Length: 90
Image (tube, rainbow, N blue to C red; front, side):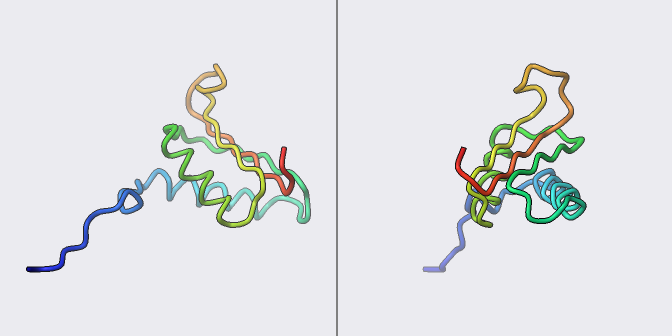
C-alpha cells in the first residue's frame, strides 16, 4: 500500500488570501507602532470563508480581537475588505 498525502483545507488557499495578507501587512507596516487598535482596508473582496482564514491567521499571530468584513457584508458597494485588529478583547 502506498502512503498518499491527502489534500487538507489549508492546501486550498487561494492566491486572493495570500494577496490580502500581503496587502494588510503592507498597510500595517505603515501604521504607528504600539497602538491598541488598527483598522485596515484593502481594495479586494474576499468571501466569508476567506475572511475566516484571514481572521484565524491573525489570531494565531497573537491579536486578541480580529474582525474581517467585506464592504458588501456592511451593506456597502462591493470591492473592499476591512480588518480590525486589537490587543484587547472587545
